[in-house]
Length: 231
Ligand code: UTP
Image (cartoon, rainbow, N blue to C red; front, side):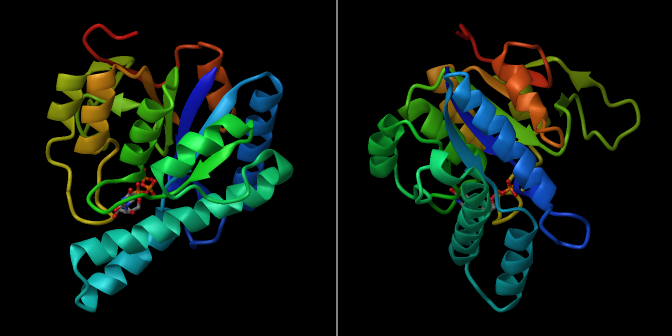
């Protein structure tokens, strides 16, 4: 199966801001076994804590939102470098930073790693665009929550949804920020791309890397996004 996986940057850092090396290693070994089983993967890694730290400092220093986004883009690429190091020879050795290169690299039989692409969106949009471009059969969004909730998951009585329609998702995420570093679980660009190409998409708990393998095997975990006429 051709899959695009987004790994939330927040999953790779502990409360003190240190890289959780064991988590990176665990992701690498799950990815390796998926590749051995014949799956082809593009992995997009988010910016996580370093992106937020740099963006906050740059904003305080007077940087524009585009400059702040640009920092986030580069820091997400750095995080992707960590996973690239852990994957060794099975990874395409350069972090793919444009779509022309993605189209070529995807046919080389290596795991492709990406971070950010352009300002004004999040790495969820990168993952959605990559999935659309390479005609991925599945898009997995591994994040720091076990799925989409009907309201802010911190609110009492919030219920996790097994499936969510695009309209529901827009409604649930409508109060999300649009400044650098503040994009929600799924930003508007990502939602639009998933909607127009009906990309089968699942949002799942990324604190357990093996959840990727479970989702690729077809287990119903996390929250599936339903687009009208979903494949
Ligand atoms: P993300 O917000 O996507 O990282 O990218 P993340 O850590 O994975 O987020 P979670 O864990 O899913 O919440 C970091 C920042 O980089 C910029 C944005 O400012 C974004 O908030 N960025 C990323 C872009 O401007 N363009 C991109 O294509 C990607």
